[in-house]
Image (cartoon, rainbow, N blue to C red; front, side, top):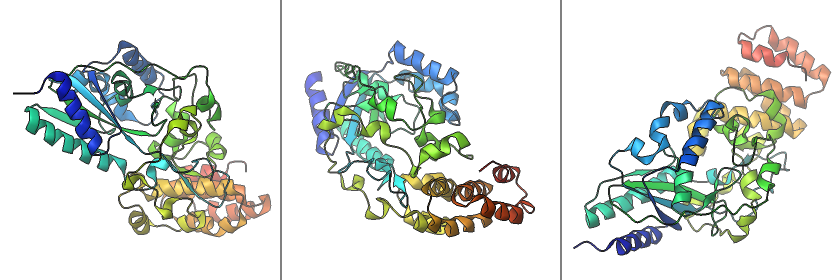
Length: 375
């Protein structure tokens, strides 16, 4: 005999917490109309930028039953990755690369999905249900579902805020054929606060609760495949993978707790690594350094592009040499970023001499355009 529905949900939540999920909530397999409209407006405005996958699978993303018609309930789960120190503390250290908190160790997708599958096997054994598990690589609007399930609310920075964990939650979802009683949706507790909006270096929020990803440093350094638009380069500073600014200033972080998950604790090599040491990476050494890391998925070319933007912003003469070596890189993306960095690090005469030396032999138009930009 199966346990009653409330006891069933308590058993699921207890099991999830035993294996490392700090937040567990239950929601109907529907998407609130306000979130559906917001997602459509996001796409219509083109705020997704290069992320074509948002548009191509928008019907599946719009509601749980759009992805899986047999879904009856959604279990939303959060795993704490709260940092031990201030993520903004190293932004003024020009010789160091600043890596977003979530990427300073193992790829959370792997760990969260592994734990979700553990819950899934247990649920199938206990209840004989069907289910599917998702982390954020699937067409799922996870943040509205998390709010519907009561584990947090979507703040003005568009990320989930939790009263227990602040802005530091990795989300996962289980879609199931079980009929589960939904929890009460979480209310918005942002009030009149604007800290997350006002701190954004690239002004990526056209208005509260709305993100233009094309201006977001996380998008520009991770998802964007081409040269970083010139208007955003200075604002990037030394952020070479992601940006934590809007998350870190949230007042609700006063309740945040440092993660106890070993896979989320920062690796020493990735806490403020030296730009000079990273600028000499090639494909082999890049893959070795970032094995098991989410950084690995962007590839060495995009990572070097980001490093070179940081080098250009550093003002450090010591980075001229490692930056100059990238003028011989096979990738136009890397060469173009190196040109811009040198235009910032060298005086006008030095840069013009270098320009005359390299411009005549440069075959790629995108790199040529970088040489011809006004320093």
